[in-house]
Length: 122
Length: 431
Image (tube, rainbow over all chains, first blue to last red; front, side, top):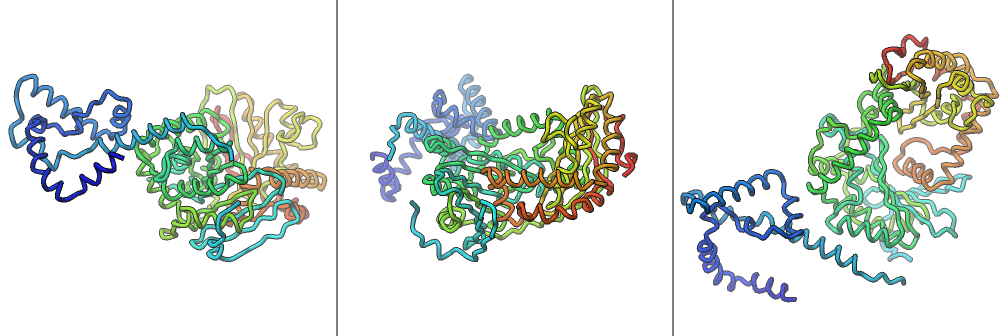
């Protein structure tokens, strides 16, 4: 139910126009874009659902993801940032993993529902 | 039991095929042109089956889609926009249903065997498969393993390879395409399978056949499912099968047993009777006492000779598969060819009577089993050749000897596997 409320609030254009500048500032302050990362690179990957979602990425997306991770580790170790032109641009910061995570979570929920259901014979 | 009959109004022309047998199938056509064929079966039986038959088997593959039919078969009952594969399988389990996918060179068939009251649900499932399968890449990776395993299994089986080979020798492309996705298959993504499926799922190429339900009810159910969304836009060019000549040889010289398939071109309607006339060891295990000259020869010489027939909509192969220890394969093939020329091509009235009796039994069996009925109904719905019936067998009995003389004196094609260095090219066998 709360998800439904959240969806309505998020779809509200007044709310969006208020929040968008704040959100952009917040994301820029978080700093991951300065290391060339995308938001979906930061999701905690040590769960079965996200592991499964990552395994459904295609080869090219996996390679790019691994490359961004390695580059960010290297920058972090050497206490550096990428030169500004190479920062992740807002339009590049797409949710490439989130749809897969949602798909897999739905499948897990369905699996749980079937495993715990009670069959009623009419 | 079923939903509103409003969709009945959409049902088009009605054709009924009178038949003295227990199968009294009816063929209807839905509003968008999908053929629906069903036979009620025994009214006391709670059993039903429903199949989605797609006339787009390996015959329709081109060089760039080689193997796609095998992948499409394996994509049956997978994730669709409506439900996951997991849910389909679990719900089928709860219904006690079986889900199978099979492929011939012409048709890909997804079959559900279930109870009559579950039929509407499974029509929905088959509609989803036809119209809304996702063909996602991660599923393709799983399916590719299965397809590879099946293809390797077929490769391990020399009889299956030699039958594939004899099709290749006889028809080259089209019907000569392998049933299996070979390692050289250019299909590497779910998207490639989706494209092949899009040309397959045309309402003119799809039929729904069922047992345990009447055709009018089935047509109404099909009209309410996603199958009603199929259109018939991109017509696939049907090329007529052409029997060419030749021999397909596979060298496996170290194999202890060699196999040799010798096949003749025949008419689809007479192929089963001609195979029965060839005889061999299929029906009677102890060939010494039987009257089939091939079985006698095989028994006395210690090898195996088995007749086969493959009937397609516009072509058929009938022939004999000889298996012998590699040291004997040359002699065995030559003796079998001689027997075909001397005994089978000049069949006695007795031999014809035996062949007709055997064919009648096969036809009766096909009409009595669910598997047989499904394949006969698919043939009927997709207009793939004449229906087998006891009357049809009787009516061709008179001319069977003449037909045999004509078919078995023409130049055959052959395929061999094993010690192929020693076996004959067809032109030295004297046909």
